[in-house]
Amino acid sequence: MSTFYIWLAVGIYVAMGLAIAWVGRRHLGIGMSDFFLANRTVGGFVSALTYSATTYSAFMMVGLAGFTYRGGVGALGFEFTYLCGLFLAVYFAPRFWLVGRKYNYISPAELLADRYQNKAVAVVAALLALVFLVPYGAAQLMGIGFLVSGVSQGAIPVMVGIVIAIVLAVAWANIAGMRSVAWTDAMQALIMIVTSVMVLFFVVYLGFGGFGSFFGRMESDIPGLLKVPGETGMFSFKMYLGLCVPWVFFCLSNPQVSQRLFIPKSVTAMKQMIGGFLCFGFIYTLVTVLWGFAARLLVPGLPKADMASPSLLALDIVPRFLAIIVMVGIMAAAISTIDSILLTLSSMFARDIYKNVKPDASEAKELALGKWVIPIMSVIALVFAIWASRGTGLRVMIVSLSVAASAGLLMAVPAIIGAFFWRRATAMGALVSMIGGAVFTMILQLGGYKPWGHWPGVWGIVVCSALFIVVSLLTSPPKQKADEFIGYLHEELPKHGFV
Amino acid sequence: MQSVASGTSRSKASVVWLIWFLFLFLLDLTIPFTCLSEVQRVTGAFLFWTIWTLVAIVSMFAIFLRWKE
Image: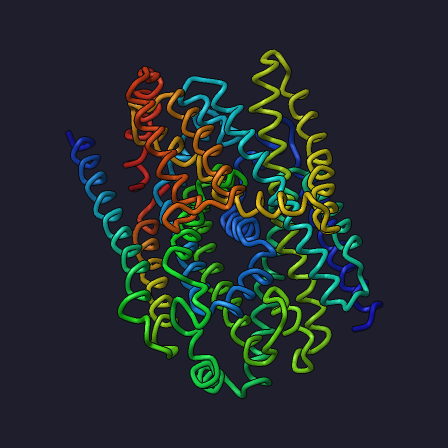
């Protein structure tokens, strides 16, 4: 693949992204809400695409295609289960949206602190996000570095790929906050979906002669991958459950995703956001899994399953220009996730940690600090990624932390559900469940323990929920706030036909 | 009075939908690992999970399309 054309494609992508981000800057107002939430005025189309691009990272084209390559159809079930976890958004999106507007919440942690009338809840929720999302961001950077290097056949070295990704993520988060992130996300989501579908059609029609013969080859050549647990037994029921439990709560547990529930400008925009994401997710998941199956048929015997997508793109049946655009599409998938994580973490650091330590700080100072946190967090993620990519002793820890991220973030879910549905829930219940659950899950994760074969996330949510309920029952709830908060929702929900 | 009635019916609808989604997740966790565990065809777990997802998506659309400004 010509190095010139690769750099040309990357250059066009960067130029388009920067142009969009600068247009976003022209609409930038003042204050935290404007910078971090685009003043809650994002339209349905952009909301749907930024939600999709933030949710779907480089994991899809690298990890999920690799999962399919190795384990078969279980990967489809797991990822579709994750998508259908969005049924939680049907319940929670209207609630987040309503209270976000009434109380002017910037982050999900701020919502929890106000509802439970305890600032420590915000600090702990923010720290939980920092601990688990930074390694997750670092894993994205590593993925992008290796993938870009692999697809370009070394034309773009790993470190160059990582640095490009982090510089773009910082730029797009800093230029106009949520506006530049959401708008560039929209562009990136379109690149991701269009290029992946195009490659699938090229591979299926030129590699197999059409979908009928493609499915026929799947049944005749790799029948063991069409059932669970699969021919290697990879997708056992316990593994499937262990993957699904943390991810089904993704729309609540991951603050960079739940923060997006604050941004639609209207009920119609919120409907379009959820509906658009469901359509995007269905297509993108199906396409990615079919990539994995196609790679298994066309390039069998790869030493590492994660090489499935790069190997597929290297085939002669995929036009070179398209392979280059797909490489940019996968970069886009990772960058759109990283910039959203950086923006959310900076908002949480400014609002939920700094503001609680210095309550008299002005909003301008809070915002200035938040903007500084974006490059600082990116440097931390970069250092993590460099250590990991060089395979030092820290690598094991980082990989484990990344795997633990989804399970660790899950520990905020009982406190979130309780905030909206249980008047008896208390701050102490929230604190003990988040801290206790996270420590317990980390011990299982880092120690490699799986009691009775079940994964740390499954045990974590059980322990965390039990702690939340028991400690809440033993302590006093903020009755007045709970009545006001839940009472407001009971008044407003029927007006909009929300369930 | 009307608001209490609409609140109650909303609450009932939300519980019914919740039970429906829990039922769907139960199917997701059982059918491919039991009835379809020996079906080595595209019309097995692959088709099941595709249709299962479409049913879940249509259910979500049925809920949120009723939302109004």
